[in-house]
Length: 150
Image (cartoon, rainbow, N blue to C red; front, side):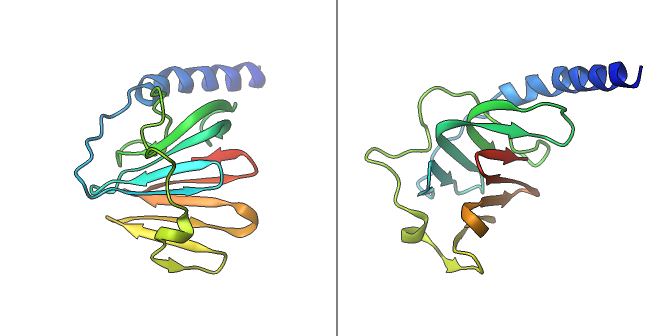
């Protein structure tokens, strides 16, 4: 019985969260956007602090409130009321033609494990053993070993 309730809760949570996750927010580039890459990610931070990354290969995303993982091709933090989420947009909207400069090329500082960039209230940084983390608008995501935690 406990297992059935747990599955029901997971399915219910997915049904509630899916419409919000599938609704991508249109982002206009105000000319104050910083683009960078880190490994298999092409990322940008806009002038309003929105952080987003296009992923070269799909990765699994995990949420503490869902009992399963699912594959995504991008991740964004664009609203303080939502966790980091995929937009399921077509193409690679955060990648400039020819590819983004590396995080090392646009860094604003160096942390304990590697470079970081701070822009418009957002911070993204390379971490221990190839991990990568971004925080903005009171939300964040981390990527380690091909899994995104949001």
